[in-house]
Image (cartoon, rainbow over all chains, first blue to last red; front, side):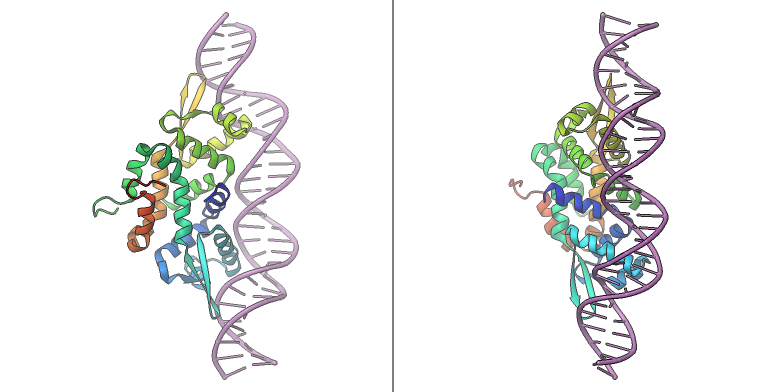
Length: 114
Length: 114
DNA sequence: CCATCATATCCATATTTCGTGAATTATGGA
DNA sequence: TCCATAATTCACGAAATATGGATATGATGG
């Protein structure tokens, strides 16, 4: 993940409908959701959501797949991982001790996943 | 970290100067950098940088501290952690298996930190 | 084919964001 | 106190972005 891609990804996540959409798709995992289902769930007009989905697609955080008349969207875990790595790489590379507690927290310790 | 704070943070990171500034501060860790040093390092005018630093401050991703005439800026690891948790919480909570490889990758495995 | 459903695209408008020059505040030293 | 330095704040024009109505595309069933 380079700077430009990271900027695109952060920009994609910096708008309410898109951030909500992305989180929704993360929770649904492999099941994904159709554009219409997302629009209904978030109470957003169809064309507005479509434009926002297009931004998410371009950012690499979201994939889609046509299934007949429906287009199903999924969170792209590779894209998500790339973005997280980009944020952590300076940390991990240059100052590992700085990020140790951060990473421990993210990994949710021993069975106590917050 | 709630949705609004996350939006503010992503928005803060979605601009080149601010993203570069944040990464710079992550690499310098506890040493931090003064506003002037950042401006010089990134070749940005002082008032432009100041406006961008203010955005980063409000986002909670960055702290500052006056030292005489100089104001020194630091990456705020708590803020960074909060943001990462926000992204991962749906993942970790609802679909742990989905995020296991992601987290393993972030923790850089056994000594081979990419 | 034709009607219909699901989604995307086009276009105009309203809003937000960005970078800059000028002015301002805060600090420390002579 | 006066000056130089460090940084912020303000006002504003230019550029980017979000939204919504209308329309177009694409797929399915009859």
